Length: 76
Image (cartoon, rainbow, N blue to C red; front, side, top):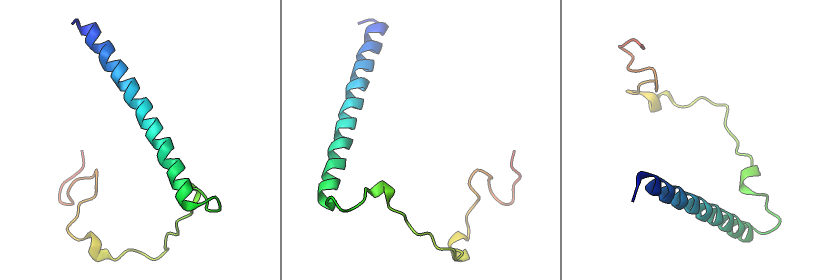
């Protein structure tokens, strides 16, 4: 097989995989709807309360800021 044939085969397989994933997502959404009943709103529209109280600072001990590096070093 040539490189172009391999690329076309990969492209076809990816397209089929995408279609299968979409079908599974739709099937899962239908099943969730059946389990929740018609009166429940979809999961994506439910609001999740976020408390205004600050987090316990002990959760963040010995951690570095993501993307900024360690505290004792300078960022680039």
